[in-house]
Image (cartoon, rainbow, N blue to C red; front, side, top):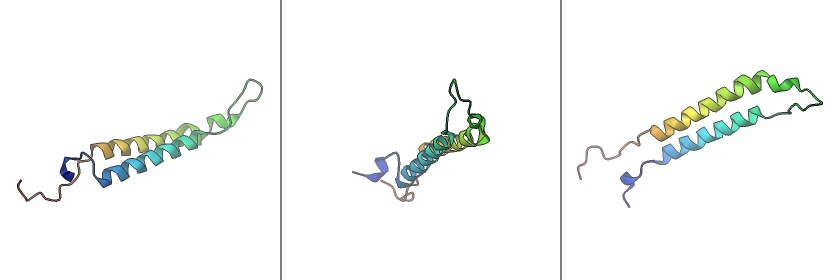
Length: 81
């Protein structure tokens, strides 16, 4: 099968994997102890959980969108079929 028929190349898949890893890291940054009816946990409103983690996730999603939209470079641009 001709490689030019594929929509993604190796770099696209690597960028997708990196973007997914960044999103997972962002979600892990959001985790922590939760509050209940009897115990109030002030850490639920920490800067890490409310600002840093969503920005990391957003960066991961943007990088995944770039990986999907990126056009693979054609190695044989000068050759005709």
